[in-house]
Image (cartoon, rainbow, N blue to C red; front, side, top):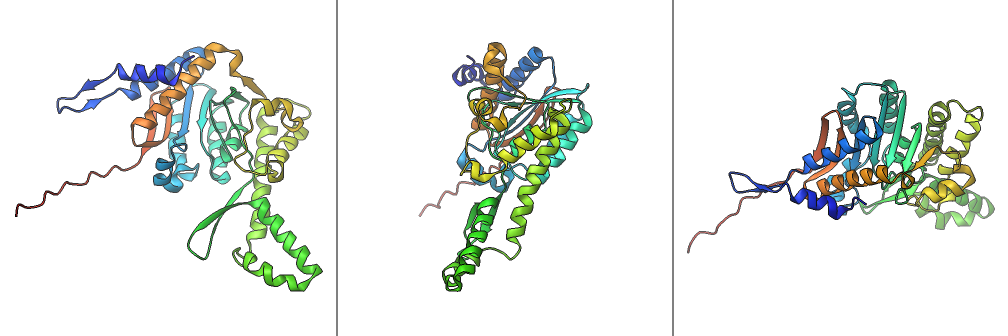
Length: 330
């Protein structure tokens, strides 16, 4: 097994001192070597889209930029620019983000490549799950996690704080309030403070967001993963409907792993490969994932786009060096 410790030891061997006396490591060189090792085995160009969202301090400092959004189009465009051929693998590690942004990325990839495989060594949640469902196939291992695709809303509160609420929970609460108040108008008083925190259009927006997520995934599954399947519409609708229903999961963070894909009727149609059955492939993917993790851990970088065709866009936190003020002698 290509463990984190193995890769870190490899990074340590690149240690050198600059003329200015700084100690540096060739982290990029190690990571790119791991990328080439994967490409050498799969015979396919490789793209990385990875985000350091599990580092909570860095994620907080990065703010909304940690998520998958329209700003990522520049990165996807950069790393797909000079890839030759019609096949590509895309390694994804992301908490998700905006469904509308995913639509742009899918079109960018699919306008250029006939065959797209997604590799999930650890986590691709929410809108990142939507992204990998646009592939012809998904490569997973026992540690891999997908997640529900039900939309989430960030709602500002009167005290200036914000809460995140599932779109389905907003709908359920509105409908529960409507049912209760229609039975007894006196119940409007206790319900009013709850309903006032929602804008007048939020109920319809929540319904539209759920419909959009399901429609996009259903469309991509039918067009790509199941393109040659006579039952493509039925299978696509089954998967999108299950993943898009918040009430199937109770939590947006719910883990969907290999065991779920093979045991849940609605998901069993997903075309996937268990990388655990190919020891060499799994070993090379884990080595690359650890190299990505070490890059994030040893640098200010929090979002990475990179390809085996020597193109990269890496986004980092701005590190401010504050001057040290020495108090004057008294």
